[in-house]
Length: 100
Image (tube, rainbow, N blue to C red; front, side, top):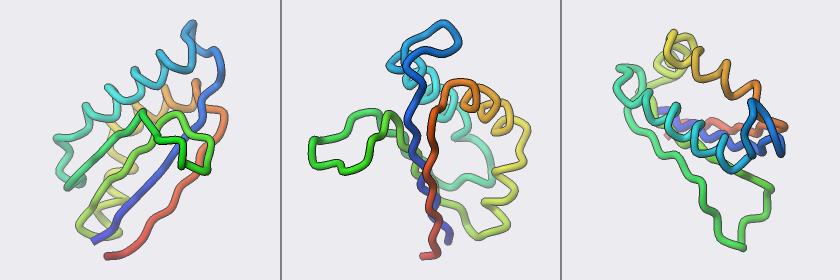
């Protein structure tokens, strides 16, 4: 099994919206991917306690059967459509993957 965790900071204003509004839009778009067969589980977070040491507006945590499943997820047309929006509103991205 592969776990994938990515977190973003957003531009203060992009696509006519504030970072807060774009984070909510991003969350909705990411959660719309839940039915993809290559995606076994997903969690999207917008709220972080003060103990968080990284600047972050939104975090995505996904689970895939294996590395091929994650690669399939990355190339799914629905995912690429969400990525197009994300690229327009994001100022930074961090990611880590690991095997379970």
